Image (tube, rainbow, N blue to C red; front, side, top):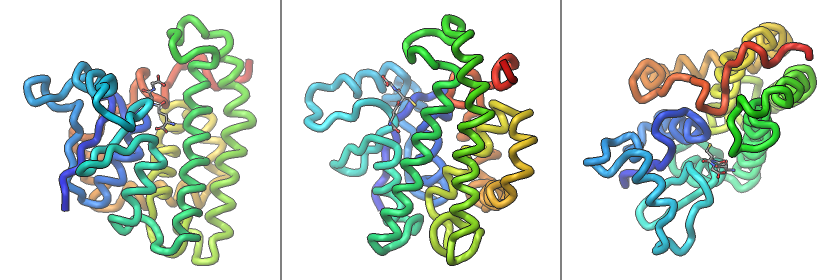
Length: 245
Ligand SMILES: N[C@@H](CCC(=O)N[C@@H](CS)C(=O)NCC(=O)O)C(=O)O
């Protein structure tokens, strides 16, 4: 087994967390490169240098990206498409793999909408410079978009012919790990809305709890490798967001 290099912002969970969870559940040998010290080749400056490296013929647009031997793979869902079958975290058949990937892409859409609750106008502006729009966007998110996405994933669990314990087939796959992160993140960002929403999404909550209790995930969550949620990441808790305008 090769040692993977994960390249992601060193101080936030962000989109990198979906990859970290898969690597942790797989027990994979990996290094979270930007979290090393600058002397060890880590740090944010090193990440920025890698992104700007003109020698890379197929550069990623943005972190996260994964180095696996000579491969440099960008886009969260694409990284998971690569890792899933290699580590028993995706079905082996084409139909199952496509289904897992489709679910992951839908999770990516949801992640973008979560991001847009605090950055509705421009990613390059501070939250403080787009507060009124953020209020409107976040209110719509908790009233309309979050229920639609969560309702979708709840229905996928309910309709899974192999049972409602997993999104894909009868075994854990990487979208299950990502959905754990979605529930955890939404609880952090929008605790009041989630208290309401969780009552209608019992399968999703049960999936979250099962993933959290998996030995490798539980050990990861209790370790220093798990960066805490914060107001720098995708899931941010601002008291003024998420209430009716
Ligand atoms: N669709 C990409 C989005 C990647 C992305 O937006 N990464 C963020 C951090 S979570 C970033 O650093 N973006 C820089 C930029 O968009 O300029 C993925 O899912 O990996």
